[in-house]
Length: 263
Ligand code: ADP
Image 1 (cartoon, protein in one colour):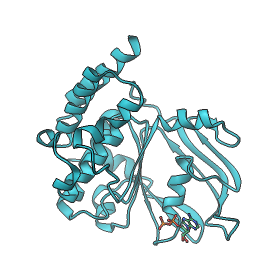
Image 2 (cartoon, helix red, strand yellow):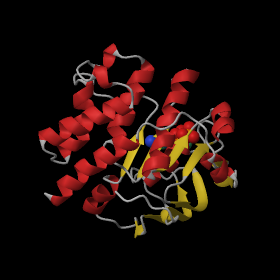
Image 3 (cartoon, protein in one colour):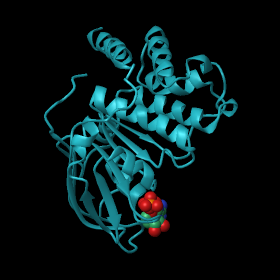
Image 4 (cartoon, helix red, strand yellow):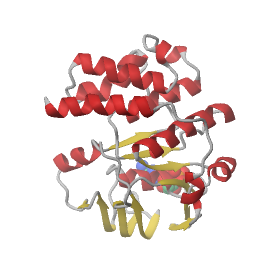
């Protein structure tokens, strides 16, 4: 996949309001544009509507008013088929790791590729590389229950990124992790964003994390959305984390996908 350097809009909300079961508005008149390749924190008090915002983007919930566009496509009156095509370009990671307990780590991560009909030799190569990238190369044949929370969350990240999503939505992914595992996970997300150009929106309460990484912040408060940290893009570029070892990973994975496309 090509890394887009110019910031084309991939998510656009225009005057979006939403509620559940015709109750009171959770979000009212929300408008914003998210550019390709950007990284945003999403924050706000518990119950403010962070999950609802992510669900609106992933097309799991509908606005009662306004318009959402994804990759330029208007999502009002969109067909089921088009929703599923859009979802193929997106992935969600939750606070609960949502792994399938009776499947091995390998099979959990392979699942999105199997659903898409990838041949098994390609699946083996891609899953093996991806597990190495998240530091779990040795755990392919174990079951989720045998792993720590941090390891399980890295399996769920591997499963999310294996389809090379253009957009990654992460709903408090570090909520159950200690500082060390949370930092490790953040580094994986940052590598995806920097090397692969994935647009990331990561919901969190963790102030320390937001201060450390300084990505721009989308805040939800009292049904409305505001943005802060306008200069954060520059800070992100100066990020001095461990040197990404994943450029090989990404070029190899991309090659596998290109081969599929050409075959
Ligand atoms: P956050 O992620 O910021 O904690 P949520 O988006 O989960 O907030 O929830 C926002 C509000 O919507 C809360 O008041 C919550 O109770 C309500 N809500 C969330 N999901 C549902 C649902 N499926 N049905 C009814 N109300 C819901």
